Image (cartoon, rainbow, N blue to C red; front, top):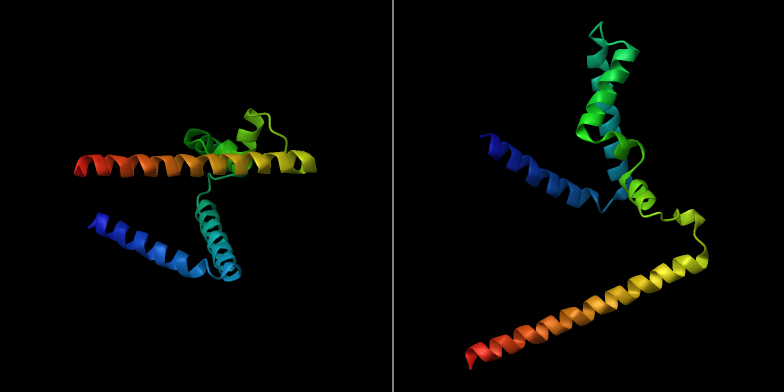
Length: 133
């Protein structure tokens, strides 16, 4: 029963996302309203407990965020952390030449992948011919 319910909502999400993605403004509005209502509900539940002072809320939330590994990724962002580890510059700090160089590198990699794909296709075709012979 639980698996069927999860499956139903998974398929429903796929359908709704497919329709809403064609209308980004409406999608953003619906998502924004849903997020605000979610946090309003969390806030109201927390207000019902008298022990839930500001300090307790901060300590509890930081503890949960650290335990789940979401603290840094939520407040800083994965791409910023990764770019810091790789010692990359922010896009706003890069010169036009650096951006063009990165684009050229990406185009080269794309072309190399295309060549590899073609070579693999040729190898597969040769194998198929050898198997049928």
